[in-house]
Length: 480
Image 1 (cartoon, rainbow, N blue to C red):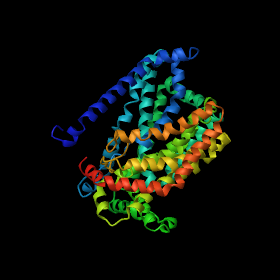
Image 2 (cartoon, one colour; image 1 turned 60 degrees about the horizontal axis):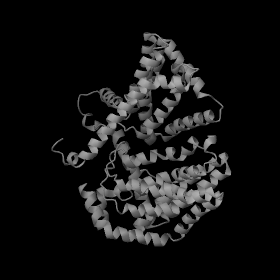
Image 3 (cartoon, helix red, strand yellow; image 1 turned 120 degrees about the vertical axis):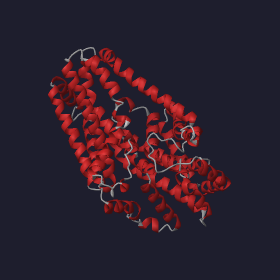
Image 4 (tube, one colour; image 1 turned 90 degrees about the vertical axis):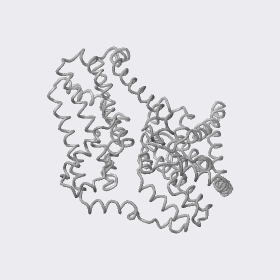
């Protein structure tokens, strides 16, 4: 480790990340230790154990969502073992054991165990507390196996992952509108798990079923012909889109970019974030306290339609750092190359906007806000992000997942997002204070429309910046 150039170069960042991890562990432990008195103060008429059990179902649903978004899949070079006298089942068990060692499986115990020894011990016996802790452990690992199974199914049978996501959305919507009460259901389930220690066998069985589900899925794909088929499927089976073919070279460049997304872990992780951006409104629109906070709703609109576009355009050239030198040596019209990236960003933003149209159910002003923020995203923010991307010279390894991975990310990538979220709000607030909310929103939309009308000028500016900095970018992409 001491001889590693990468470790020495990133020593300060590694120390900082290590400090943050230790701080996170310390805070989680404090939450577990002091959660009992906090719940007593917040809910004086209820037992803290009952209150905590009533929110556990929310936690496990959120935990499954976070794992799906952020937890990396355990990888293993199985081809080198298939010719050896090692059972395929043993290799699969080893892979699944590695997934069980994920940090996300142990962090919750820093809260659950201390709370069980304080809050639950005041109500239940030692045996009941022990059974409850076992149930939590089994459910945590059940979520681990389900999340990794759904991520693997996204490639082979995406409809399974889609159905699981749709089920979570339907449950959240039904609970948000009061058709069901997850707090009551959660309290009933976990209170009974605490009262009857033998019921911990149910979470154990559920964990076992989740384990077997992923086990047989992986075991069926341990044959050489299956491995080769999967490797060739990723890129060659992506269907060509007639609309893109009609765009000539620009369309070909867009198709190549789509294949790049599907081929690498880090760009795939960006696609996985789509539900997070699009469904962001469900966290705020149903709540009455946000109904009249239009400035905050502008922020939400920017995030929903532009979040995924920001994630792409901010690193548009960094994604190609492995073969950026090859791009510079090819006879490519760089203005079309830039235009292709810009078109991709706008298509992503447009797609996200159309998905958010059903939010009109919460009010016509929501649709108006989302529309003007969409115009701002494609007419101003997209050009700004791609222009600033020409100043990025941090190498990015696409073979690694984006979860907890900050390689290729610099302070500039964060600072450039400030205009994205602050500028529309700053423009809107003076008009809102004067009682002219729709005028402020219209100005945000007009900025986007004017920027889109002058898109050829902005493309020329971005292309000029690219030519001025291409060798600096290439040097950074090689050596970082």
